[in-house]
Length: 292
Ligand code: SPD
Image (cartoon, rainbow, N blue to C red; front, top):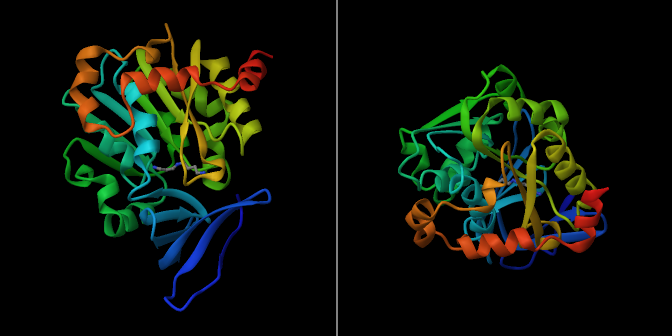
């Protein structure tokens, strides 16, 4: 999780970049394009042979041109196909633009507030990874706020957003406060009654304790909350989770047919069938742990 190393430079100047996590490493071969220190983190842009240009924050893989749909379709569509209304959306984080791009597939959507703490992530993503955000940066429905997501949810009036999406990094540094009770309580407060909350909740394998604690915490605040599991080959263990929550029912389990038919042909991973299987695919041990 904390360390990344480059190794094995060969005559083509190709290197391996790895995310190190508890005696395992997850790496790609390619060329480093840029490494910069922002106010918040080290930002690396890497051109990988396998997945195209990729973004790392503090040596952790975030996304790559050809390895992002697995993540962004999963965090967005169970929420946007099921919330009663999808006019006002809040994204916390998401500075690469992938989550906004998926949200903007819906015609009903009127406004996205995207609160990203690190302006440099946006600048570099626009410049080096334009296809991750697609046309989102030019779409007038996207309102980018450079600021602290924790303060944003604290200062927003109640019952305001139809959907809230937490597209955070791992819970350390600036992202640590995006995994705690006060933050989730504020998300609950500002979410509309028939809205849907969505958050990336780490790996059930490589970050099992963090995953379980996050789901339990979200469940303790929202009346209904369930994790969905999928593959994310770029991340430690390649096995990831996203948790969806709502106030009055498990509405995130039930995509509204008129809405899903609008977007299913624009997706590579998400479909109502994929979603059903991915909610069902809860590992038995995690299911038991979540009951304790
Ligand atoms: N271990 C990486 C977790 C990062 C999740 N967020 C990725 C951002 C993609 N928009």
